[in-house]
Length: 124
Image 1 (tube, rainbow, N blue to C red):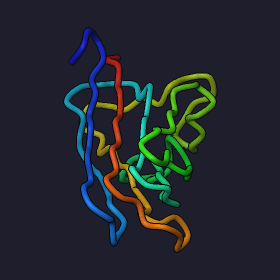
Image 2: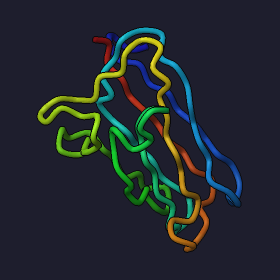
Image 3: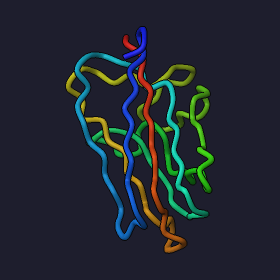
Image 4: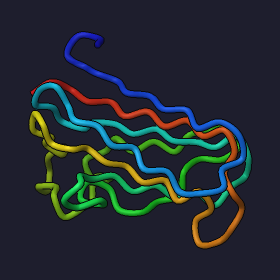
């Protein structure tokens, strides 16, 4: 934790052969303020972010970064899912099952290799 920010990072090594679902519960109320995701190759992988109740409720499907250059989501308009109040970062309540789903090859394209995903939350 850095000040009131809390970062969760995930690394998925190798050439992926299946989708990956990341799920965890937060220990306190937070706002999701930033997502960074990249593969080390030129892949077609996509990511959605939400909860167990609405898997793309915070961010709908988007292509992650390629060749080690992350695509970042941090502007208020980047959070475009049905669970987001316009003009506000997504609120994740204590105990909510946070969920992100990586489609390893998008729509049957090139599989991602060595994927890094970082979620940044701020307390509140």
